[in-house]
Image (tube, rainbow, N blue to C red; front, side):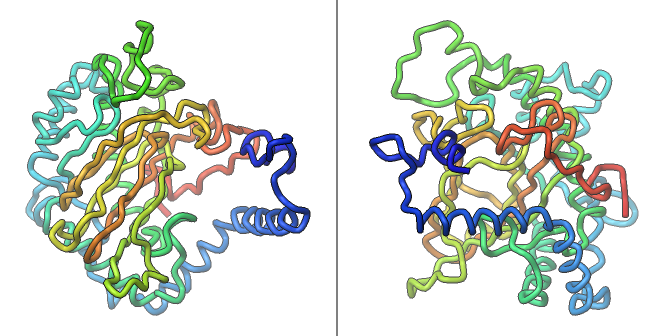
Length: 375
């Protein structure tokens, strides 16, 4: 443990020794051991909470329409997706070869979808869910959060407030459908053609000198074939909501107002605003460049100029998990987003966990978090 802390994490003093007292090291070791045990028992505790949540949040209390994402308009009702999103998905199907949209450029796809490129070749935004479906989903998840507030788990180790969509029984009918029918085809197209968009993604302080510096808009360790395979094999996910709130009295003890710079435990991330952008002030997403390490490391950050994006209801921001980003402080109101960390078992078995780079201790995802599989 001491070797890891001094080597990989750089917790050393001027003499190269561990920059912690014996007492501090003991406390840190206990915290890490507790967290390790929590993670090893994560799925069991999650299933237990899910079972407990099913009692107060019974089927009689649920709006059944919120549990079955519709991707087309038919006699049973309208799609959850925006019209331009459906047109873009149809465009990818009509211009695909073997399931891959090899004939489409990102510019063409974004033109059909009415989307935009936030950071060239790396971060994109598209209108995904229409306003009606956002309100439907947001209302149901807020009701779940209130009903099961003393039972439900945290969204992740960074955010305190939000809902795990699997605990709300929305994996099979909502998030799997989003992954398979929208996120995967868009990711295949947007990131597979990133090498065609050869230009600087971010403004940096260092002057680029070699041709290779201008060759890719993906970060240095991103091999294009690897990224393509990664997007082709997205097969499971971690889906949750986050809730950022501003307290004018300065008492944000139980709520997050912002989120510091980080990268995601995902291959591809989709972030969709569920409530109206007029419900809050501030809270922009800020993208600050790709990590230059593999796996990502805060000690290997680029010196990129931040690129902000202001949320719009129903719009999904899609980026690689290794992209460094943060949620800027919210200055008023509430912001609620649906976030999906989309993952590839194939990529992780070949290249390791995106957080530690290891392959020998991977835990196989539970079947119902795979696409095309149900509980």
